[in-house]
Length: 535
Image (cartoon, rainbow, N blue to C red; front, side):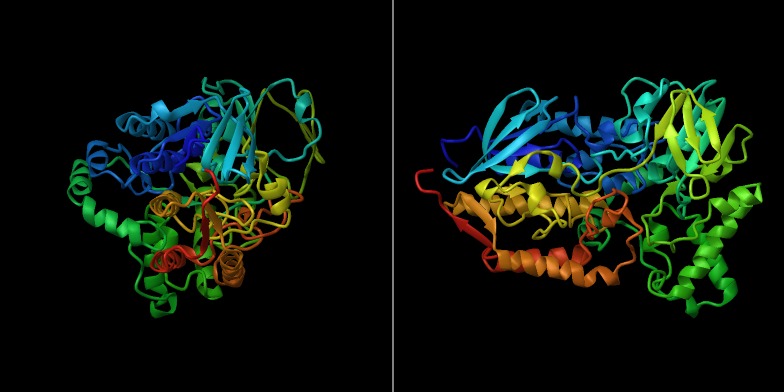
């Protein structure tokens, strides 16, 4: 698309979205390169290799749908694959489509500057190399910047310590060690049961409990494998159009339409159902009727009390500050039962906050405990974390960090005003359900937009400010209609000082699909397309 660039499209991030974008851009005939900070593909599934890490969306619903051959030749072993299997799959995809030749690993982006005269991006990496591209696509993910709480003394600890989101590639030995896990979110509840089986002593530091329900994982049977291979077209159609990006069937009624006995039976069925079906296939008014939600919460609380022997411990593990669905609920295997083991103890940080990390362990207001190993399962700077750390500068040197100082503004969650030829699928205002499905929609749209620009001789793409303003207004207008509240990290409230803004698309996937169809039928007029003189 021009002689003044090294590549047409430069992709940053080799996670599920970045691999997809690399594949689609190359398939569309663009020259493309991908930069990745890690030593291999996988993104979230490269860095989060802690014991117990696994999908909580069904493996096949998380997988790529762009190749029937790929779908049919890869056999997932479990309904919810563990990290090693996920990493094997992504490496298989990269090698099957010969994508590795266009990937550069160990190349963390340190700056990206837009040149208005040439409508190009100049990107520098941690190995001091520079690359110039017409289009920059930051597929850097929403869970790629681990968050550490501001606890004094963290660097003073003389033992071993790791964040779940930066787990080493060499095995971590828990055997006969005194281990602390700080955090009981999605990562914490996965790793705790594993450590509990191996450590001499495990202390769990919990700030706030979550509504955890069983993942109900299982091996995929031969009959299920045969169904997956035989029904690719129908499965793809469902996953491409489902509002949440799952194969789950919606329920057909509200809670009040069942009597008490029927409701209890249905809740038992939901408890035994796989993963997110507890949200997608539950009563249709679960998130809209306070009484229905309260009944489900009480059912889950009773389950916790039946699983955890000590009444006081069970009570601490039951949320009091939010309803089910107001935060992203984690899914667990053996989590609650871990607290029945004599080597496991729970510290409630709402009662006894952490004062500091010492050379030997952790001190709370109730005293100190000594540890050999500390695991920080304290989450991520969600949504914007990676984008705001890349040194991105748009028109007139405007830093993206300044442009989004009050929270992100986007159009379709793919572009923002003042940053032409820059896209960020899978970033803020994305992910209204099963991430790869939604992010894949964005990747497909960006690729179609680039092809449209190329076919019409354009080399500059920038969102119309009015289109962006309308999209942001829609997101703010619909926040009240979705279940998450400001207690959720989807508002950025887990990171001190971060502006409180809803970081997903509150209009959901149907709104995205509707807007994309409208844009295409209107010849992409939501974007300002132009040609740079002399390019």
